[in-house]
Structures are given as structure tokens and as C-alpha cells.
Length: 267
Image 1 (tube, rainbow, N blue to C red):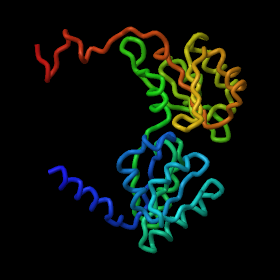
Image 2: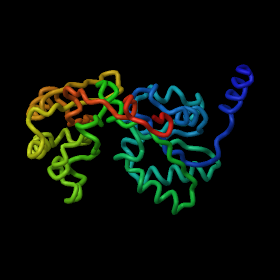
Image 3: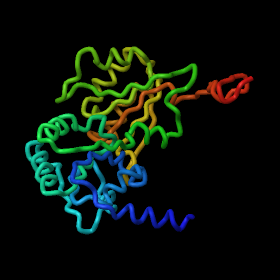
């Protein structure tokens, strides 16, 4: 039975993909954190357009030897989308490889709009986001019963403006587990806004290039994140996790408590 399954898997991996654009999340950097579906697509696709400044070269080792690899860090949307359209119209498949999860700060919205207008089929394949990989490396759960039950994913205004109703200080008022992306260049401003609501001793994980070979994760009090960021010379690819869950937490979930009954464990 196991041998038959192996043969089926091997045969399946050699199937030709239908001509389409596959928008794939490469995860935070570690090739082992790719989804199985993402790996299969890389193994089968004709062309890969990848964000080479954000996706490690090692992930391309899954690609076919004859696959065409196109770097996109120096290209604009006006160059990238027509290229993908031409590839699909020439009866080939293309993987558009993004870092992390495509649903978060990956600029796929405008790509999907233009592909739809050109009547080019596409599919989005999710990936692990940096905040998930960082929490795993830190051995923490960001939702601790009785302490914090909400996770906020956000950024501070920079060249891309954040809507006024999502201003960082107002989000900090919740004192939730707050994951701050794309903000290392504005860390002083971020620290000041966070300190309006979080206590200065709130632990913050500063996570640089999570999942890469030069990954660096340090935990400092909130009132030291600007100093630590400058000391480490971090200006990009840095995630901040601000959360009471990073400190001492002793609460336990009700889910597996012996006094808690539910459908599958009635009293």
C-alpha cells in the first residue's frame, strides 16, 4: 500500500501545471517552512518571478533545472504584470514568489486586479508570516487566557501612509499582542506612540530576518527598543512583537481543563 502511494505521489509531481499565475507565499525565509503546495508548485512551474531582496536563494533549489528564474527587486508593476500575462498566454505556468504570507504587506492586490482585467487565471497559496515564525522561535503563545486574547498586525506610517483610524497609538490602547511590521526606520516614533499605552517594561521581541541564516531575535523592554534597534543597525526586514505574553505567564486554557466539558468530553 505504501509503495502504491509513493508511485502515485511521484506521478502527481510530474503533472504539468495548467497555464496560470500562482501567487505563492515563501514564508519568512526558512525553506522548511514552505507549504507542501508551494513546494509542489515550485517543482513543476515553468517560470518563477521572485522578490529576490526578500526571498532567500535557497528556496529556488526546489525549482526544475530548466525553469526560468526572473528577479523582480528592480522591476515595477508595469514590467512584472505584462511579463506574467505573456508567459500564461504562451501556455506556460508562472509562480509569483512573495515573502511571508501574500495576504500581508505583499502588494498582490494590484497584481490580482490587473491579472483579472487581462483574463489571466491566478491562484493564491498562503505562507507562514514572520510573526508566526518568530513566536515559534520564542516559544510563546501570543494569546494567553486571562492576559491577552487579541493579536494586531500593523505598521507605522512611512512612505505608505496608515489610515488615521489605524494610527499606532490608538491600536496600542488595546494593549494586545501587537506585531509591528515595516517600522524599523521609524522606531523612535513607534516607541513613543506605544509608550502612550503600554507600560515601559512591556517586553518586546525585536526580530530580524526570521528564518534566514543570519536571523537575530532579542527581547528588551519597550522603552529600549529604539536604542537596541540602532545598536544592532537594523533598518529593514525587522518585526517587533509587543506583548505581555512575552513575560511570565502562568494562566492555562480552559480547553483541556478537567473541569471544562464540551461536545467531545461531556461531564
